[in-house]
Amino acid sequence: ISIRNGIANILIEIFSSNVKCQVHIFQLTSMSKLQEHPNMSRLLKLAQKFNCFYLSGFNSGDCKPFIVEGFQVGLIRADVMKELLTYPEVFTITSGFVELNPAFRDYEERSHKINEVLKKLRAENKFSTLKGWRDECYEVKTEFHSRSLLKMDRSATCLFGIKNYSIYINGYIRHPTLGLCIWLQQRSATKQRWPGNVVL
Image (cartoon, rainbow, N blue to C red):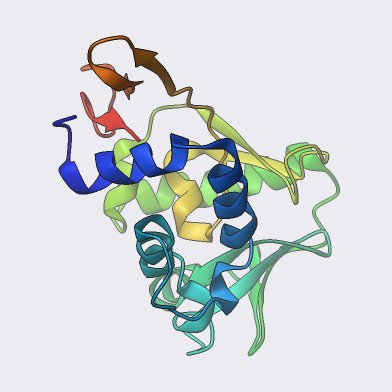
């Protein structure tokens, strides 16, 4: 496979046996507690490099929990908090967290107030991510199956550290002459973000 040798090799390792795949999934759930071990697979070593936020960024105090209706739905960086300070009627920023005004009565009001702030930040060109505004509303929830607390443009979710969900389907077959072959998706060339990129 010639996509990206390092990643392709890792994908082959994942699919080499069902047992190994289950072990990887189990170990990845507690990656923040995982210490590097000489027998650790390349997949786990790579995952550990990317899954280190709670070992470094969060404990440094650079981010604060984002609270909506009493639930933590994200984490907000210091540079974003600085801009949100100019909207005290919408956000309360304390030493321990950032909270969306609890006086907002419901989903519609919370969504409307957040949208007003985001449109101003976009007009003032405060964050480059808002250049990717696409009028695609994203439902903000505590978990995938829980009720939505509000919605915001998908391009803005990273500003609030909100968990995003997407569905990608990758497949593999054992070809009689080529061996293990992996099918990967490629993003449309017309997508605003990462057009044409291979999805791993």
